[in-house]
Image 1 (cartoon, rainbow, N blue to C red):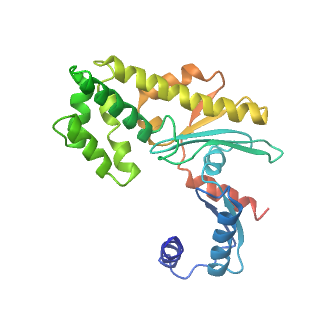
Image 2 (image 1 turned 135 degrees about the vertical axis):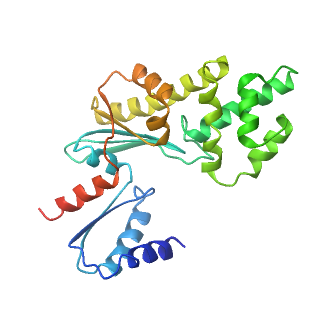
Image 3 (image 1 turned 60 degrees about the vertical axis):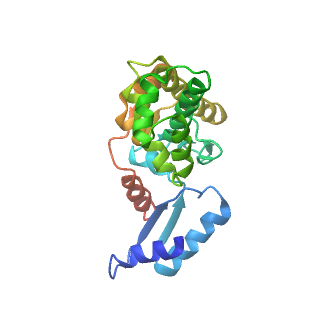
Length: 247
């Protein structure tokens, strides 16, 4: 299925003969997955110089950095670091069912746990509960759990995290969840930095960090190094890495 999608996408570009190509893909840190994509691209572009990298590598490249730490927090979460000598490290990125602490999915899950805990204790669901029920189209906590279990895509879960940010000023639990999300993301950064013995800079990317200032502020308070927002689309990193193949 993925092969078909990639093939259809590239063929839609028409008759193209690139000299160099860089693809950023989740799962590229797995040798078998990286080799498979390389082989596919080689078939489509037989005379092209190729590089397949983890998609977070594009964040650093788009920022013009050869060394540093990229932190991506959106539907999922992952931190990736690189040194000038080529050494790399990654933390997180385990997927929404197993990890992705601090991500949109994780925030929704923590909010749902808070709301169902209040329901079990026969307490008011509070502003957070009301906002989460509305976001999920549910009438009560039981309907909320049914609605969440019916969501098959992580993006649907992540979208409901808006309920937490909307009530951060009116519900203490929302503020706590955002604080814990920032701490989880800061841990990813710290662990990558410790393994590579680098102290940033840190480049932030992903929908949560780009559009939720309360989370960005909380993260900056927890990371002692220089932190930047990515001001270029990550695909700009793919262009930079492809150009490097021609040098």
